Length: 193
Image (cartoon, rainbow, N blue to C red):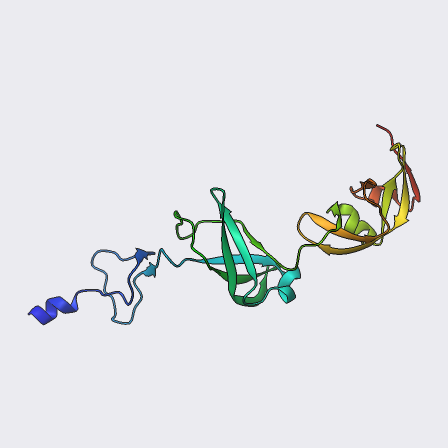
């Protein structure tokens, strides 16, 4: 009888916090059936959704980090899943030197990946002008802001908010970053405030 009662006990393969537990009273469970998930609260992984543009640059071992409550926690990529869904692929990241005190399964954090070494660059905010001109030209305003002239530019790397200017602009020059579609084939714009 003791063996029968002992067989009713459910044992976890590892220590941790039981989450995703969906059993109902009276439900029959097979010996090989998963009845929940065990999370180790000291070894969380982050699942990161990344734009497909960066697929060739994200590899195992790539470093990054998250900031929570004013403290930065270093991470590294432990796995990359290259399947593209809705323009994004998935990577897993693990903490390399401790993790935030308060973390919960399913919690969202903003992670930053270091895709290259820091370097000085001239940047423009991403705007509809990049698609409208194919990144080959831009309307640059004159010093008094009364006119904007079409100028050839060469753009480089980009992220969600900025694009690097490789040539065609000088620091301090202002660019019209709105849509160029209404301007047609204009070579010059008159700006009214």
